[in-house]
Image 1 (cartoon, rainbow, N blue to C red):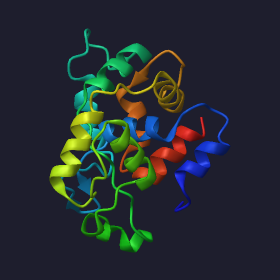
Image 2: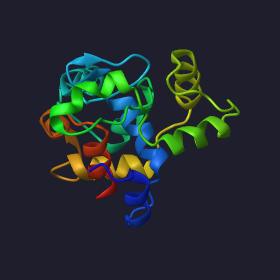
Image 3: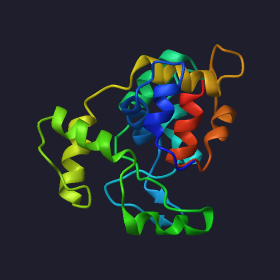
Image 4: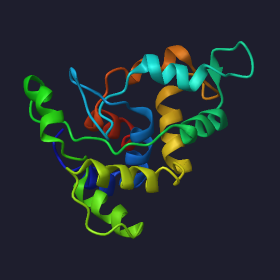
Length: 181
């Protein structure tokens, strides 16, 4: 699981780019991080808070949303660059302390693309600058398509119960799910 996600992306059949998945996870995950709270970063998916964001203002009393609704709601969510989980399962609690962004080379590429210079990822204000700049970039249609394929049982909608699949996922688990659609 600790292999570079970039290598997985290169071998994946889909055209989802690494940043597409960072952008998607960085909106859907929250700062809860293996028993701690990560500042200026996302770490794990909490399906309770994700469910509120996806389904709280559904136009009807239905507990399901279309792919277009999913896309719109995900793009409205705040973005925070995800943290790379540390070590083995027993060592995951150190993730917040080590504070390493997932896909560091992609972090650098995106900072340059946004003309932010060579930012230091441990600095909270630099993280805020990256998060703010990248929050304006919508999640790609291909990443949304792959998420929808992973979650939808009927191919028409995603229901509240469908997002349970994502419960507690970290960067490695989520990116593997999306790249393998």
